[in-house]
Every structure is written in C-alpha cells, then in structure tokens.
Length: 630
Image 1 (cartoon, helix red, strand yellow):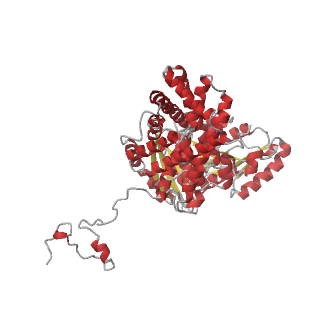
Image 2 (spheres, rainbow, N blue to C red):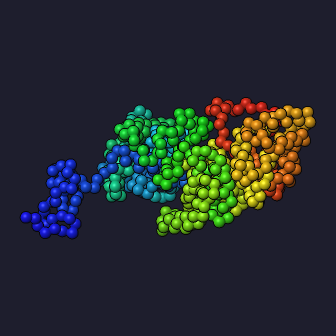
Image 3 (cartoon, one colour):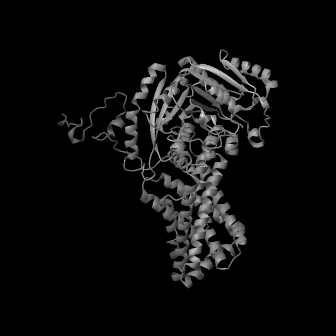
C-alpha cells in the first residue's frame, strides 16, 4: 500500500514511483532520488573537460589579440614592475633568515598579483595566443607582434623596478649584497645550457598554471595553483625570464656585470627555455590531446573560417592575420548561401535612406538577399560598458528605434536583420563586425557627424583598412534624388562594383546611367570610345549614355558632367579609398564640391602573395588612369 503522495509527484517513505518511460532501466529508477536528481555520481561537474578548457583559452586569446598595442604594452609594463616584488622579497627575506626555503615562501607573491590581476606576462602568453595560432585563427606575425609588445612591456617594467631597487633606498645594505649574490648565481655560476633547461621547466610550469587556471572554477583555486606552481621555481633553482632580466639590470646598475654579457649569457637562454617549455611541452601537447570538435561552438562552419597557410605564415602580407570568433547572435547572420549587405548607422531616424539604399542593392541579388542594419552607438569613454547594465540598456533602446527598418522587407523583397552595439570605438567596430560576420558589402555614410569623426582617434587607419573584409560603398548623401547617375570608369574591380550599384539603382529606381572615360588627348578618343562601349556591354550597361572626354583632366571632366547628374559614383584608386579618405589624402575636390550625392566604391584587393611581396608590376596607360590617382 503506497504512502501519501507529495506535490512534487514523489512518495513519502522513500519509495520512487515507477518510471514513465518503459525503456528506462531498473537501475536508473532505483538511483534516482525523490527530487529527481541522481542518487549516485556527480550531479554538477566540478571541473571542465579538456575541450572546454581549450575553448575558454581560445575565447580569452580572442580578446587579447584584439587589444591595442598601447593596452598590451602598459599591461605588460605593470606586470614587469610587479615582478620587482618577487625579487625584493626573495632577496630581503634571504638576507634576514639565511634560509632559501623561507625566502621562497614569498617568491610567488608578485606572480599572484600579475595573474589574478589580469596583467600581461610573457610566459603566460606561450599558451593562449599560441593556441589561437595553432587553430589557424591568428597568424604567426600576429603572434610575434603580441609577444614582442608584451615582452617589451615586461622588460620596461622590470627595468624600472631595477632602477628603484638600486637607487631608491628600498634595500638594506645586507639585502643589497644578498640580491647581488642571488643575481650572480644565474649570471656567473650557471652554464648556458643549464640555464636553458632550467628555464624550460619553468616555462612548462607557467604555461601549466595558465591551463589549470582556466580549468579552475573559482578564484581561491586559481590563487592556490599560482602560489604552489611559482613556489616550485625558487625551490627547484629554476629561472624566469622577466625576473632574470631584472636581476641582470640590477647587476649592471651596481657595476657587477656588462649589459651585453648579461643579455646574451643569462637572459637569452632563459627566454628561449621559457618559450620552448611553454609552447612545446604544454600548449602543443594539450592542443593535440583535445578533440577535433573543440571549437565547434565558437567557429561557424569550421575550417572555412581558418586562415590559409600563406596567411598564417605571412599575416597581412598574404591576406588576413586574424579570424575573430563569433558570438551566438552574430553566428545566426553567417550564411554563405545568401547575399548580405551590412548597413552601419548612427541614428535610425535620419539614416533611413541609407538602409533603403542597402535594400535596393541587395534586392537585385538572387541568393536570399539580406540587409543587416547595425546600429553603432558611440559610448562615452567614461561610461563602463561591462558593468551597471549600461550595455544592455543601450541595446534595448536601440532595438526599439530599429523596428521601422523591417517595413522595407516587403517593399524590396529582402530579409531585414537588426542588431545594435555600444562601443567606445565606433569606427573600428564596423570593421570588426564585418570581419566576424563576413557580409558581401558594407554601405555606410561619410560625413563629419558620422562614424568618420571617431576614426582618427582610434587605431591607425592602415590597421583598419588594410585588407578590406568585403565591398565598401561610402555615401555622402546630399539629397534624395536618384534620377541620374554619373559613373566615371577606367576599368578595374572597383569600377565593377560601381557598375553593380548603378544597375541596382536603374532596375529599382529607374535611374538613368551615364558612363565617363577620360583620355589624355584627342588622339586617344577613338580608343577611349571603344573601351567604354565594350566595358558597358560587359557590365550590363549597354544602354547607358557614353561620354569620352579628351581633355586629360579627370577631375575637371567629372565636375563638368556632375552638374547634370544627381549622383556621382566613383571607384577607388590603386592606393585605396578608405585609407585616403581618413587621412585626408584623397586629392579629388569633386568629392566635396559637387552639389549632388557622391558614392565611393572600393572592392577588396585580390592581389596574389607574390604581388603583395614584390609589387604588382602594373604599368598604367595614360588613357587608363583611375579617377583620383592625380
């Protein structure tokens, strides 16, 4: 006879109701408690699997590799100066107690500050950025850049610490003598290869600390791991490169050692040992003991997002140097089977025409045309986006204003996707979002009140605009008249993009298209007419009005013809359009002087690795100059 039933469906007296699933085993039924949780085994895992640890490391490296040089350097400098605490305490306690074991107990303190505080230490960076490179998500040049900045910051911080310890009166006389003795042990009493192998084990320990730190689920565990691991360095008479560099400079400042000898005979073997120990013995081994689906949740469609072998080896010289990881929202946008136009805007109300232009261009594509409207909100530098709910509040308000964009879906038969991002680096965010989500085209406004203003205060222009992730169409909107368009052309991929935009406007808005080609003098007029006629036919603009100007003055010709057209559509130059716009080196007054709307088109370069390394070998014919090359 069963006992009274409980509201949760179980029974008093410890009995378990019969399983609802006929296929459920008797063992499963017996081992389930009254609350439904397993009666044996672990309910909540207290550790991560190796795949999960690797994913956490990749996510952390993804954030680190995108940090600016300034952020990396000063984080490294803080870490290098914190190492001074280790040298200070180790020498001071050794002088007072004459016990290396007691002094070693305080040796890890500087490293605890660094790792728990999130500072950049070179030996830590033998794991996360290397893992990113092994996954072919970052190139070797990007890895070396990261290492170089962090190491230079560490050495600068260590040098400042050595200066303070030497001339700041921090050490007592006995401690100074002990510090010199400790430093001399590595610089004079230990052989080159012995230093190397001792440093190799130290590198293994530090990289292992990073791995175990990502596997830990709480701060107390991480502190304990860091403390015990770095305690092994002095107890095992091992060497850490930043500590060694600080010791060398301390000896140099106290006139005990020549700088070159200290760097080549002490710091160099320790640097190599730390690097190889961290990279080979920990990172690579842990990489190959994880499964092939370790990044299935972070990388969309897997291998096609990885860098190619030339890109891994040569970085931006051969193409991309970094492939960012997508979050869940952005992952939904990535679809290689659809044509997607990304339209970054600053104000949903005033930028409606720009969104409509993106819809017009997308509507002429056959493969599931989609418009992604990205509202970029420039957050004040003083506003923290990581706390206080500011980021979520800004996103929520933004989404309300973007609701009107969906009305374009039925009008132009396109899909409309909207998202918003609050950022301190608004212009940079456009390129980051484009590299993450890989749209076919970005359509954005150009003007002083737009995102261009922020560009000059952000990363160097060359870093942003080098190797464009997709086609770019920059619009200087001076009216809504789309009745006629002037397209100057001298051929090339950027003119091909201009032709696509012109065809879309003609098909949807009935825009009349005129093509302009400029030659140096009348003797080239016939060749110019032949070129322009063939180009128009090849690009689906055979019914366009053809204009050949034999004045040789590209800019003047465009200005004259622009007077009778509402839109001027210009292709980029060999030297790049976006870079020259941002650096005010685009010497084409027509961009600022014509009364109508100006559109500037640039297509990513498709030059080969050989052409990037050794030049294109392109010889421009006088009749084939691109507008803006003057």
